[in-house]
Amino acid sequence: MSTRMRIFVAALTLSAAGFIGIVSDESYTSAAIIPTKGDVPTVGFGSTVYEDGRPVKMGDTITPVRALVVASAHIDKDEARFRASLPDVELFQEEYDLYLNWVYQFGIGNWRKSSMRRELLAGHYPAACHALLEYKKSAGYDCSTPGNKICAGVWTRQLKRHAKCMAAQA
Image 1 (cartoon, rainbow, N blue to C red):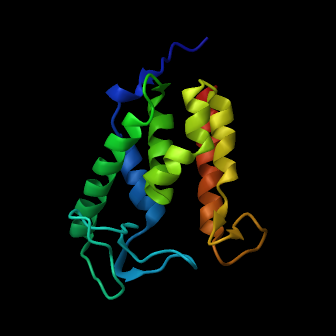
Image 2 (cartoon, rainbow, N blue to C red):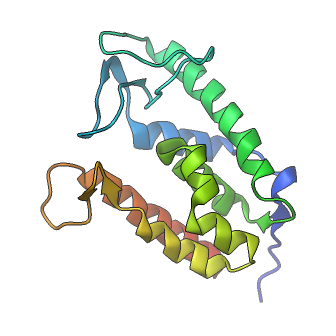
């Protein structure tokens, strides 16, 4: 029997491993790009906005160190909203990290409407893990389509999150 205990979300913070996971998953770009069709410009480690709220524009450039600062500021803002969205919910650290990774990719607005959040609020942890697999589209395209070259990374990332989430349930 496991002695691990979930901790109230209000007491958790993104781990160093979670932060490294986000920036590794996003990959670094020194110049703004549109990562998938229909997406907005991103720079650095997938940042769509700067600390002051200005959106990234095509033509923007950034250094690796500056990109880490911008990503950290973005995550800090999202993290406070994420914690507030899960009152009285308890998570394992790895669950917290992977859902915050999802928020960084899909946005806090999408998180608030998500089936993962609804399942966590209801205390249905495995169902929340399975709900990750519902988010497989980019610009209306099903990224889980075998052999797709449009947004395969979106689906690969969801499969990775789902596997980590299910492993945490054991």
